[in-house]
Length: 256
Ligand SMILES: Nc1ncnc2c1ncn2[C@@H]1O[C@H](COP(=O)(O)OP(=O)(O)OP(=O)(O)O)[C@@H](O)[C@H]1O
Image (cartoon, rainbow, N blue to C red; front, side):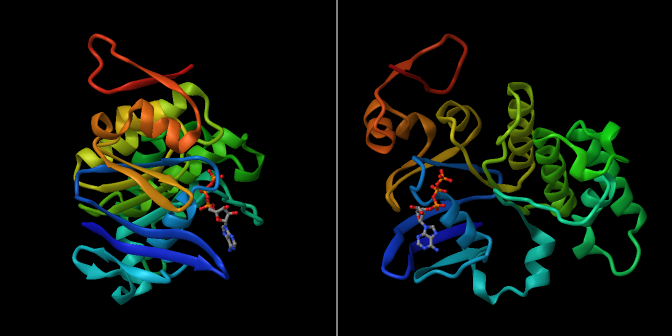
């Protein structure tokens, strides 16, 4: 469903991404990992059409990304960016309902209201619905933003969910909850691309992992194929020991 071919991006004389190739099928979750400055957010900005490739191409459902109209994309692709500053005053309910804007004209339909109710519940923020967004804690705001992007494509089978560090500012319980929700969406046929800093979350939740370093691919494949001592050392300059725990079906890396 997402195919990236020989993708490069330059800003001035800096080459931020070079020759990136990968594909993500419906029902798959791709985790993008790499050190600070590796190019992860740049890649997500290209996938979300915030910037355009210098070279190469992105295909969504076999169609070049630049051929889609903005409204078409808004109805099938939602993006959780790293920064979500809101300067105006909105309640949590209003903000999550904003996710539904591409789907209705003047007034939300019963379906839109029902989706918002369901997503508020799924993300555990129903009790915050009438609170003003700007008065929430950082972690609560992050969950509201996630609810908004889920609401946007909640009724779009094989939609596309792009998440830039969705676990940012969340405590351990909510990190797991948010990633379980994203995983659940890919299990239902969505295509999920998620930037993560935690290697073990990538290993546990993703079907495929793309490891970037200095704008280039170090490895791309299933967690068992790519999360290993050498790739982690190369990408992060950190030595890890790979552990095997009975009952866990994914590689676990423990920094030494
Ligand atoms: N417009 C720009 N002009 C020049 N350099 C840029 C520009 N945008 C980003 N960069 C640089 O490109 C590199 C990749 O940035 P990017 O935000 O994609 O990294 P990242 O992997 O998401 O990092 P982090 O984990 O810190 O969020 C960084 O060194 C950044 O400073």
